[in-house]
Image (cartoon, rainbow, N blue to C red):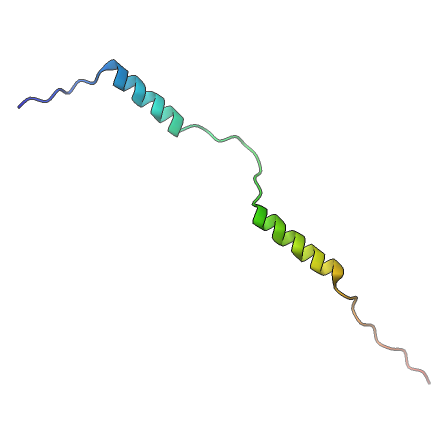
Length: 61
């Protein structure tokens, strides 16, 4: 039984196109996770809503 070891031109072209699509470069940029942003907003709100630090009362002598 002999095997055909030659690939057709169409399959080679298709394979090259698929490899190019898989190896495409991603655009440079900063991507933020919405959960991280929501967590930061909640933390900032909690810090702003917290009462001020208590101060010692002056001695009334």
